[in-house]
Length: 214
Length: 182
Image 1 (cartoon, each protein chain N blue to C red):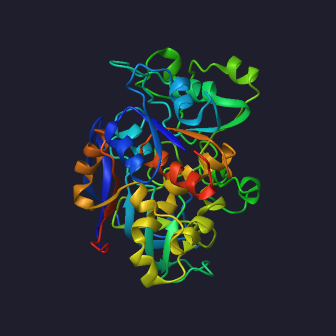
Image 2 (image 1 turned 120 degrees about the horizontal axis):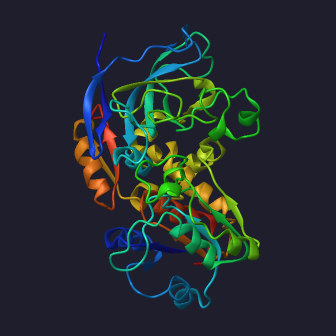
Image 3 (image 1 turned 60 degrees about the horizontal axis):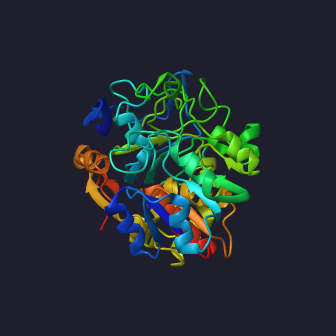
């Protein structure tokens, strides 16, 4: 079986590359197969400002915590129950893991899915308190509820050409856009964006798309 | 729109695609800086893209986790809405005081109430937006990689990427584990 290099948290200010297990289509804690999941060969996986909170020691992340929740990849294996996503598809993975079945998912609140984290609503890959899912700053990663979670890019060649833009769809672009939408930004708005890190810049670009005045 | 920060490199990045900027290291008050740009000390909409590790303004200002929330409330028009994609937590071992360690911050809710403001918190439900934004990218309606200064590095260089990002590099690091990105 192939290995799998992954970024892991060591101690405040320190991460390293470690060899972890190659992902399996299984839900370890539930002692069953994950037939609704897929394995991805990771094409692009971004470093997020929210990872920095863990790396600075500002969370209770334990040593060895795998990192990475901004994932874009190619499907290389599908579980028995995956109907619509196919091997070879290039896909964007929303950082929120969601089941697609609970009342929150059914109302579009996938950030607080009720079935993917025993500790609290909401889950993510490679993040403390977010359900124990393995991180995607790795060569390979498992994605559950694949038909529901994944966004397939329409054309592979076009996707690879624009991959540096499309990789932003897993988190920061929607996150910046959501900030703008939830603040009511629309045509002619005056807007103030606090913070010029990647999310702030993505939010500013979103405000441009939405037709702000200033 | 106007983007505020204390990091000149990041402000320059915002300017590069047409944002107005305010440098929060200066002594000027935020509403005055806003007024110089839009002609009044308020905006229609404000977004906190910083979160709980926020720093106060001015030289030598330390961490002040409620600063950004209070800032954006002060400059949002009455009955306006505040978007808060910036992350806040229920536990922070490095919090500035006992309250901050459990996520209780000195937010000026009285001001927010008096101004009839609304707040949106929480993780972004990505699925609500990703297809539309994909179409905007594929049809060249937005240059998001350029806006965030997307910078590709190999997976093995991730520790360096984390360090550079932590120091405030105006870059969005993309790890490329299989060397597939041109």
